[in-house]
Amino acid sequence: MPSLRIYLAGPDVFLANAAAIFDAKRKLCADHGFVGVAPLDEHFDLSTLSKRDAALRISAHNEALIRSCNVLIANLTPFRGPSADVGTAYEMGFARALGLPVFAYSNVAGNLLERTRDHLGSRAKQRAAGGLEDADGMLIEDFERVDNLMLDGAVEAGGTQIIVTPTPADRRFVDLAGFEACLKLAARHFAS
Amino acid sequence: MPSLRIYLAGPDVFLANAAAIFDAKRKLCADHGFVGVAPLDEHFDLSTLSKRDAALRISAHNEALIRSCNVLIANLTPFRGPSADVGTAYEMGFARALGLPVFAYSNVAGNLLERTRDHLGSRAKQRAAGGLEDADGMLIEDFERVDNLMLDGAVEAGGTQIIVTPTPADRRFVDLAGFEACLKLAARHFAS
Image (cartoon, rainbow over all chains, first blue to last red; front, side, top):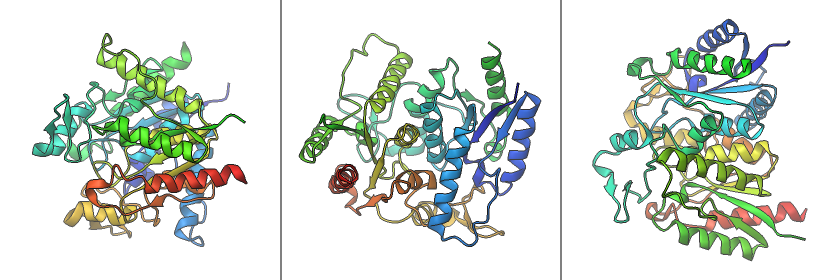
């Protein structure tokens, strides 16, 4: 049977050592019988393109890569705020609509409400009708989920949960324990 | 011909007056010959459910609503940071994988690089290999796009762009000029 392909979604692409992280992820995929597919997998010459055309090329390429995969594992570690990277969220939704099983991990503790409250500090306010809101009057979700309920829902619809592995701050974008836990869930999914 | 259905994705759901905003959006949809479909459209009794089960019910319902629609219009106004709401990004990816035309607007000026630089202030640093990075060493995308290239790509692949309408801060989550501009693009899409 040809190996199942896993799309490696996450803000890992923004790391200075992104290539090394994806090498490590691909190695772990292989250890569990999968082929890891990173957004950086196929290089093409972007140097002759405008920034706009380069962005479009990468976007179309990543969508095609997701279509070529059987599973998606998302790194939902909060990115520049209390929630995950929007590019990763987009790719999760894309995979889910295609029917791919979606697994996910975050290397930061706490649920969305707790993290958003910490992030906002005194700017979080009680709403008269109940619940907390931010300085813009936007409600802070309170479903005891790791992130926005659409992200948790994508994972939980498949019977698993977002794997949360509290990690020292300076290692939260590179620690792969949560990623490997997702690989184990994926292996179990296809074994059953 | 039955009216085409537009899924109304956005952080509007978190507003205290979300129902009124969605009423206004549905009215504008009708003015342009569409049916607006809001995440809040079908109420069900969540009071007997655990928070987890309520979240799952809403997530599954929203995915089913997107599948029932012909178009998605996303409100990508930055949400608690330099980027859009992750739930909205997820729903954009979901719609795009299904082949729905995706239109989007943001009520905040600037591209992702500019907004992230403003957000980070002195924490934005020059990377030796070129480009700017944040305090975690994560690169700040520099493609002159409104947000993460996957979001811009979803819209630009259809031949339009994210509509940016700089709006006074206290009206940025409720001003509907950008939304109406998207409706015009959608009408043109189906007329051609």
